[in-house]
Image (cartoon, rainbow, N blue to C red; front, side):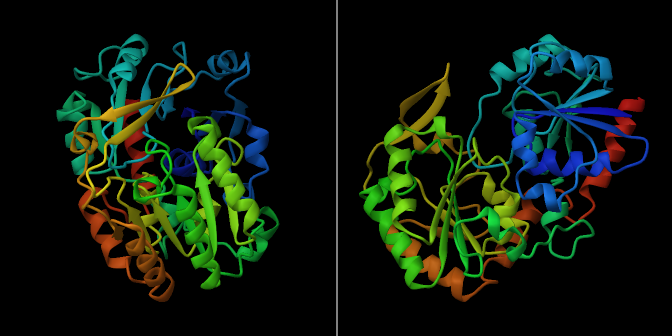
Amino acid sequence: MKICFWATSFQADNQAFASYLAAQPGIDVVVALDDPERYRQEPVWQVLPFAGRLLDRRASTTQSEIESFSPDCLIVDNHLPKRRLAPRIYVLWHGYGWRVDDLSTMKRELARLVGSVEEPNPRFRWHAFGPFDRAYRVERSGLAHANVVALGSAYSDILLPGAPRQVTIDPGAVQAHYSIDLSRPTLLLGMTWHHGGALGHWGDDEALHEALARHLDERGANLLIRMHDRHRYEAADVARMEKLAARHSNVQLKFKSSSPDSLIDMLVSTAMISNYSSFLNAFYHTGKPSIHIDPSARDGSPSYQRNLRWGRLWLKKVADPRATWKLPPSDVGGLVAHDFPELLSAVDRALDERDCCSELARSFNRRHVTDADGHTSERMATELERWLAG
């Protein structure tokens, strides 16, 4: 069996699944990603071996190399190649999340490569994380029922405590990759880019981030800020966060565009804060505390959505904020903060009660993720092989 991953982001589920497949006898795996050399320099290269071959997705020769490899299946996340590279396509979406997403463009591109996905199609499968996700993709996204399989999260296999493939790490072994002192507790701030500044809807974003950094320093803890690609934020947001990190030795700022891997950041962190990024869904598998920043303003101020089109950042006022939620913001696996004092209170609880969210996280996974038991990649590989054989 020959499998090719066309990875916009080689992390999370496609990273975990590709690593599993490449270690199995009789399976050849190629991954096309942006800047493989940068990925090899990330600390994940030390702790999650990948036995397959990496190609630079941006290179002019890559698509021809993939065609010569002649894969049985192309596994994609949220973007597709310009031309057909394999007879079948399996979509392993880049996270679960709470936000409504529009698949109209992707469905048109899929139709060009494998035929209609709104009718039963033996050349196409969409991977759902669980029963709700499967129903949503059929009822709201318009995919044919037969094309969607709910198989869980491959990423859970390496994050679940005690799982056979769990990745564990001594923070001291990766200290050289961090400016913050990893012997201290670390709060990971993993922001979605769609809401802009994570705290601006509660007041002055710069002043509130400053107060958060100082509060954590007083508690003897770090703030590890992991943002999306730099170009997805307004220049003022980027500059503000860079100045924050420069002012505080307990603050480190990372952008996905220059530090593509997030696994090690999760493993070295004590707890996570996010404004409802799908990053949280992966963090739930660790059982560690998570804090959800409600991105809506309590005073009724307008809500805005940011999107990237044609290389430009567009800001759109949202008439009905509820229409942007796929899952209700109350359906979470951790704590929720509706204002800044609640955020600081939740931070203190996360530092003082390290198991405060473990049952909340397990409960979310039971509702939304199929069989998070440490063997998801095996089931996915079995289903993939059965499908390709058919």
